[in-house]
Figure (cartoon, one colour):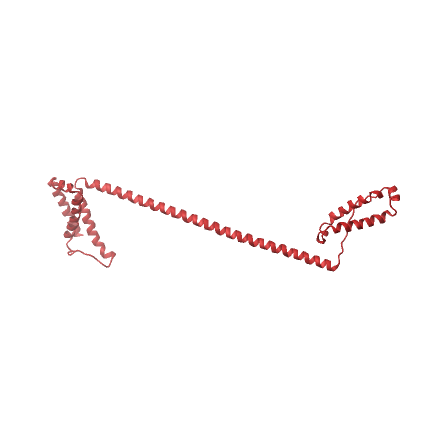
Length: 247
């Protein structure tokens, strides 16, 4: 405080400062909305201190601190402010709820989308794997069948190969008739099912006809071969037929 300026610059320094503080406070309050006055009290005090110091410099007075203790408003204004605050709170709650609902719907839709994409990709992969497995199985069966045919062809070219094949066909023919009664109620039998020799002869006849039709030169070579081997083969076939009859 400057005593000279306070004595000659103003008549009543205390009264002048009080009036200046009130005027400045009204001016600063007018710059703010009513709901911000209660929230920004500290900044309001600082603004009033700066305004007082600028105006009272010629009076030799300096304000160090200014504090607004309380703000009293009319009941209607206070009620209106309360309603405004409640409306603002409801508005914010509604906005937050709507945003939450929107985010939830977006998340659900995104989840369904991802689930459908993953399901379609899984189905696609399953179909590809199944197709690859079926292709591998078909290829493996074809290779195995081709190898079996090559082995069978090589065996037929060996000594007495046709006779061995005839015996195998005869055994399978008899075995097939023995299983007919087990697998179905409808049974197809030849005219003389009790004659096993006739059944075997029919099977061997079919095989011989197929052999002659597919490899004509092979039958001629067998017919012109060693008669001793053919007789030995016939004897083996007769023994096998006797064994089938006994069984």
